Structures are given as structure tokens and as C-alpha cells.
Image 1 (cartoon, rainbow, N blue to C red):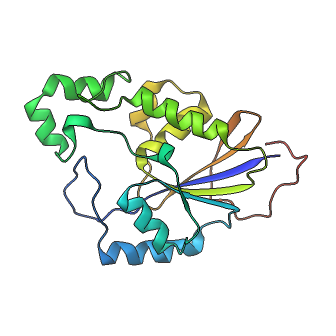
Image 2 (cartoon, rainbow, N blue to C red):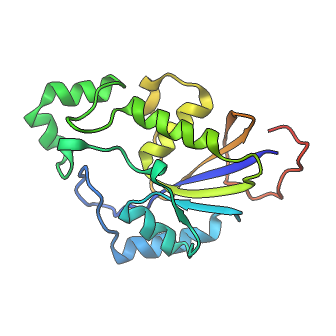
Length: 197
């Protein structure tokens, strides 16, 4: 059977200072998420990452039954947590540059891009064959990692994948093989079991 997976990047307020931290969503952003819910595909399984912004986005979608999945969590920023990218780049430019260019580099006490990509790939590959239509609210890093897995792209491509808030990465999967699907999230009827994925 083919798995249909839509990874929806969590909502994010416009104009807010970017920090390596989980920040709550404001009312305007929650309203935008509520409106966006109408364009999401029907799903047989709903997941959300554990961050506050992902859980609030899922709630704005009306997903009372969404399962919180720790494998979909954001990058652990270790000692950089709570700081802005500019603050980190000023305080430790060599480490910050390494993190942006070397997939194995990680903030002190944190997680590397390579580790995030492995974690997400493991979650994708563990989805049961009969999962059907799956939708999850995730962090941008998780969506990027899923694209890397689907395309078997080099880990250095991670920073070249841009997934804006409230947009979806659509994948199809079968037997450990994932494909990136371009276009709107799945709006057609479910695929027959024998159809190629």
C-alpha cells in the first residue's frame, strides 16, 4: 500500500525576531492557521511535533486527535537555545559557520543536521504500510529532513530547502522508498492498493 504523507510547517508570526526557541503563536497567526485548515487533505492519522507552536497550529486546525510525536521535534539547539542567530554568529562565528556548512557540526550540547535527518528518516521508514493518509504539523527542519530522505540528497542540501509556515511537503511512500510530490497537498481520492507509489 502507498502511504500519502503531508508535512505541514507550523504557523509562525510575521515580524517577530527569530530565536532558537519555541515561542507561542499570537491570535492573528492562529486565525491564519484556522483558515489554512480548509485546504488540508483528509487524513487517517494526525501527528504533531511536541513544540508549543506545532501543538497550537494543530489545535487551530481542529485536530483534537493528533498524536504528539517526539521524533518530529525541532533541532535541539543546545547552548544556543533562546538566542538569535545574530547573537550566536557574533559570540561564536566559527561554530555558527560550521553548523551552517558541516552537517555533522552541532551546537554545544545540541543536535547536528545529520542527526535530525537520521531521526526523521527513521520515523518515515517506521510508518506502517497501512498508514494510509497521514498529515503532521512539523518544524521547518523536519520538513527539510524529509525532503532530503525522499530525494536521497546530500545532507549539505538541508539549508537549500525552504518550507514557509503553513505550507506542506507532500510525500508518497512504499516499501522504504519515498517520493517528493509537487503540487497541492493530496486532494484526489485515495490511491488503490495496487497503484505504484
